Length: 430
Image (cartoon, rainbow, N blue to C red; front, side, top):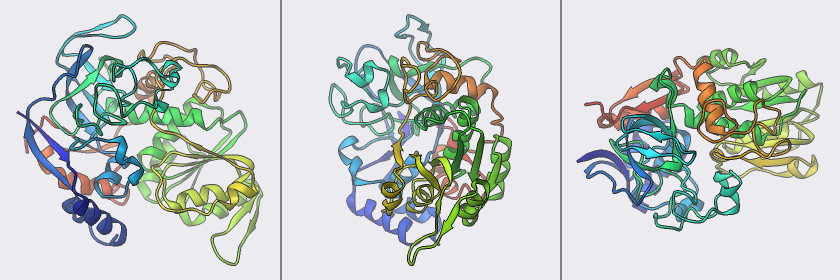
């Protein structure tokens, strides 16, 4: 039997978790997770859906913001037709192959190999002829994540058929697996998937030499995005917005030129860019002038509003955090801003300058086949960055599945507690 956490369909429990987490913020995260339709179950290993699929036993599996939004009822109902229940969460995974597999580039991975997983369940995984997006390497834009021989699921960790990282076994298609170099510790390898997402975000930002960049949010998403911006773009000046002391320390370590407190964001950007600050009768202050690119790595109404209000006319706002809440879009219209979404990572060929990739954003390195450290794919770049970046201590705590409520509570309070990334060790005993 395989033990794992399972999110099941229960609208009353989902609504209760949503109310507790959204309207009663003074309560601990444990109250929301107690209300959530989540349970620890023992089941058989997931069945291999077809040829080219393998079983993976996770060594470590991360807890990310989208997982927390789902568990606490804060994710949008937009996602409801894009998932199948019950599903096991967890898409940030380093694990061991249980069977040998041949990759698309002809390499053979033997059973026992360590791998990380690109979680997007696109055309290849679903046994379909590649759509235009998948054929072009833009797998994050696949239109077929609800069809084929798999149940609906935009990613591993949201599909009833594949399992997820918060368990002792899941299944993955050969197109999803990337070998982990021997010298890369598990605590770094488990960060490769969110790093690949950060690399993708840096590319989508379209940063050019000389740009001044603001990153709103210094949780795991924001800090890894800072690493990717520094590694793969030619930004002139990068400012971080950080709320907690540990976040400030890591932002400086990861290459921020300046770190601002949330309540000083408008003033700090005004001072650095000699912008004009205006105060409307109602609503927050805004700038005429500001940064060239603002990156919202939180997704809240206040963080996106801040990004829109501090970006210069004609600049770009990148939404990386899972969005929630309503926002006044007047600055988008009046300042003729570009609002760019970024989701997951892309795994294939590069199209050169102007494409929405790190290479197109001024990042180094030629195009290459996905999966090799240092190649042009988001996962290749992320593997290379994971080996060299100052990531020690980013994985702040490791929990067995039996302590899942404590783990989720820790993750929900990570910033306040000085933590960044909380992970499960599914093989660990209680």
